[in-house]
Length: 415
Image 1: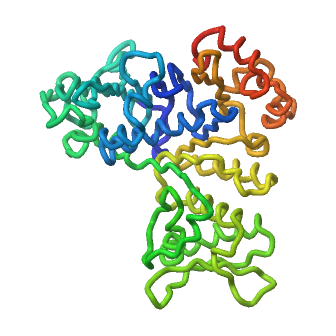
Image 2: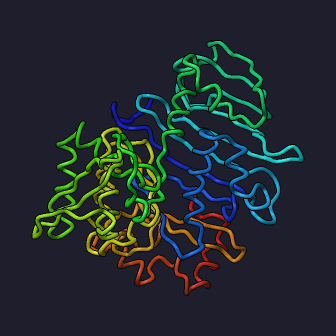
Image 3: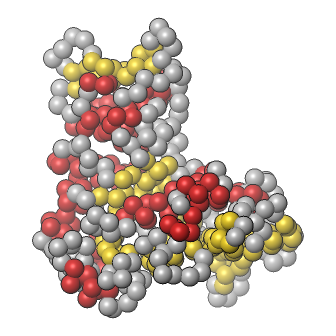
């Protein structure tokens, strides 16, 4: 059984991707509760981020829409490659053996389809551990084994989906008789991938409390209203942290206008009257939005944030990194960054270096596995400083030769 503590959230422990854009064959093993991706522009950080977005959209709006949105095989499959796009991740639910989800997406003249999909876990009924597949589908046909903890003796149901575009986990996960499949479906559909912009947080939406921040942050006033009504102490904790990081800030409030819209107002200590959010600084609004996400009373099980350093003072970034780590008690975080100040707040097991090899394919290397880095950290060095001094040997946009040398050791030495 799992060694995960009861009550801890489900987590992805590893990820492998093949044939997805520049991700020809890359693995992230292991993934920490807080994982940051660091690398030059165009190295593939956003593509890794988009893997989670693509999977989430396949479950929420369907394979066809997620596929078409990204330009189909012409733009999605790694150039010069054949075969399906493959996603595989290991994840762990509290109190349940570690599971592996495998998905292959292909395309023919009729459009995209799920070529292969399976779900298995490694269990120890007697003796050595062995994998047990309890869901397996190929081109819309397959089987699923029912039960909270499926075993070979449990009922095996042969199924045929209405369309080969349908994901079996997304379809069968709607039935209570498949609790493990249902749990995976809820896990993926609940991911929050942030594409936050300061401009979006300045919107004046219709009044009405909303529990969770949207991907763009355009409902920030609604979430502040919800916290004000339902979690006032938590809101005060968020504002207390914000006041610590934004000099002179005194109060943030959401007020209902006469036309029924909701306006966010921010008050500075020296002044009697608050200002509208549209006149507040980008950094203040983005920090507020990040704190709202990280302190969500019922957070998503995975949160992705792209380049949180934008518009924030560099000295705030190590604190934000620590805030992200604290949030991992209740969620898992994936962050992309270019900031050495944010990286200075990370640990070696939390930082992956992303870079391209001479063929243009993305590679990944865990900083904890780079020669000398653990020793530097043990003696008081910080990761961001080591990166700027080029101790990582890969991921430097001006040092292509080092990246080619590292790539010559294998197609993906993240393994």
